[in-house]
Structures are given as C-alpha cells and as structure tokens.
Image (cartoon, rainbow, N blue to C red; front, side):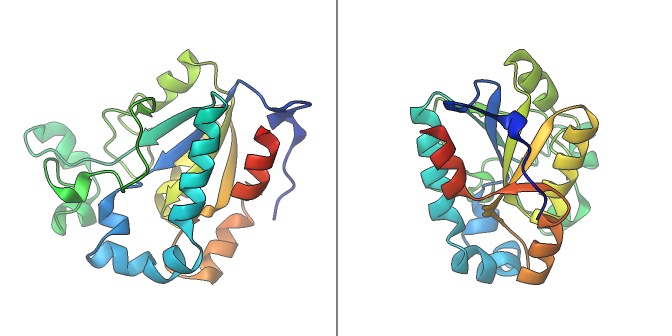
Length: 201
C-alpha cells in the first residue's frame, strides 16, 4: 500500500480543498443482475455500502463536498450514447429512466454535486468533472465506487495526469475478487474510511 502524502491533510483535519468522489454508486452495481453478481462477494463482505454511507455523512457534516459521478445511458443523446461502454449498452445497464441508473439507496443527498455528460469508463471522459473540481478549488480527491480495477482506476489515473492528488478509499470500493482489489490498492495512495473520518474530526 502506498504511503499517503501529508499534503491532503492539515493540523485540524481534512483541508477545504478536498472532496469525496463516488463513481457509479448505482443500483446496477448494488442491487441485482450480472454487474452486481460480479462484485457481490467483495461488496457485501467488505461492507462497502455501510462504510461509504458513514464516510459521506461525516464529509457532509464537516462541509466537505461529495461529488457523484454516475454513468447514465441515454438513447436520445445518440452521439454520446455511442461513446458509452459497449458492455453497458449490450446488457442494458445504467439506462436513463430505469432503476438501473438510480443511485444506491442512502448514497445521494441534494447537497451533492452530480457530474454531467459522462460517457466513458473514465469519469472525466465527456463530463464536467474536471471543471467541477477546479471551480470548487479541489486538489485532493478521495475516490470510492466501482469497479476498483476499471472505472475507479481509469478515473484516478486521469485525474492524477491532470494534476489532482487522488487517494483510493479502499473499503469504499470493490471489484470481482480480493486479489485484484489488493493489486489496485498497491498502485495508488490509499486510506480506509475509518481513517479518513478520523482525519475529518
């Protein structure tokens, strides 16, 4: 596990230039169906939902921004729809207007910032995520969501390339098996939700 840099923290805890980013915390991953089955074991055994709800509740209480980056497939937006990941289109996941695109229960709050325009595995692709971060003066991004080795990894690499300090919240992410989860954790700076909540106090 990479050592977490101290630049993300101040003496009083998390700085105002930090945010929690949730990638695809949607019912397609957390309710039922083939995507859910892919991560179900790790998702449930790791208490990912409970950890994440606890983390974002603490973040909101401290005034730390929570940013939601859902993937929503809208057939009416033909140009963007064609750019969305083929597996999601083939299996009709994340479809606008259906439960598959809805936020997981307990995850969304009206105070959250919702990324718009996303069309790729990388949550920056086609979206206003980078603009949101810059407009809000965010430098440190704590990343949660699914899957650790795919959309989470792609987004973190993209944001790091753009100059942001990204930290993986290890117990608020999941993928198909623990071995792969640990492999990705070795590639990034990581923190647990409990440690992060402690830093917020």
